Image (tube, rainbow, N blue to C red):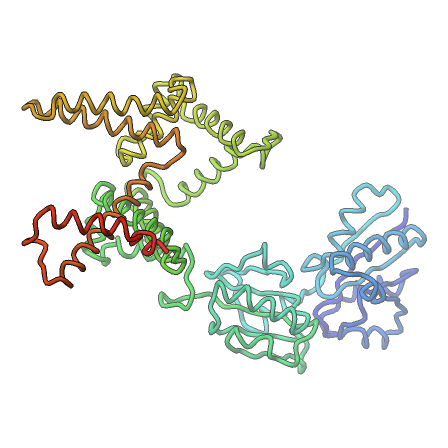
Length: 495
């Protein structure tokens, strides 16, 4: 059986390459280096080790992934032709070495090749030594080319490897600035572990792509964030801030709050968010979304203190729900239209909540939801089983019927009956809105806004005429109201 030895050349100093690796290279039938661009190469030549490299593959391939895969396939083909082959890579074979990962995966089913990995000092060891980092406090190693999927952890040491050039540094800077801010102090290190040749420089993050000496032996060190005042915060900072506010030394008001006392704030913040959306103010939306998120975190902290759930449980629950309710995305179900998606959503929701009757489905609509919205949803769910008018004209007739019933009782003394009939009338109007695919809550809000604009016109026009509203008759005000309607005032304001 042919043997393929995958060996590490260490970070670059002759002191870090092992005697065992040198012996393997001297006895091999063929020695291949992934690249000749490594400080140890001159030492290998001094030791009269004959080798070839795969640098030509870098020139032919379009991406680094393609480079590493092609190298892996070629070295395996070579190993099939020679009894004893050495493939040498910078540092440690199992540290930031994608070609080795490919080789090991490809060789799982190779019966004719025996693969042995011989470890070495990695450049990570060298960086830790040069920067005097103790990994016991947490260390995350990230490929600069994978920052879209591999995110740094602000609460531990981070080393971003393979900062090949200024372009890679610039791309990394943009992604990292979203997490740390532009001015966070970081350290670039080149030639780690090579005595007399190390270059170590600390600078603000925004400067890392302005450094001329960056090359393939450069890495970026990001220290842990250890202060409460930061340029950029994340969700874990918010959780910690809330923990502090609720702690013994925190804020008296925050400590007093309960789930019940916070109810009104969640409603208020939600409406402020809706207002920002309606005004198409995205800056305001970001602020109001933060206020809504604060309420989620606040409730989660209270629950954590009570031992019932925490923020992680909230996130876990919604993630599982989204995956469960989207089988057409995360499963094998095929749903081609939005209508089919909504029907499947309702079906899964009933199963999830164990709703076994249509009445239970109606009762599941929250009681504290705004009445117009709740009416709309209840009617919508009842309609799905056929309990509905056939035509909008029938729904309109029901409005007239309810109006007549209200006219019969509104002069009486039975307040409860009056309330009942007013409710029936509004419910019937909502039914007409549903038939016309009009959201009654939004429609009513629009009408309120229109009323305010027309009322403003009345007041301003009266003032121009030297009149005060409280001194005008209803007929006088009604004339101005009709004037506001007739002179297209509303349309001008809408624009």
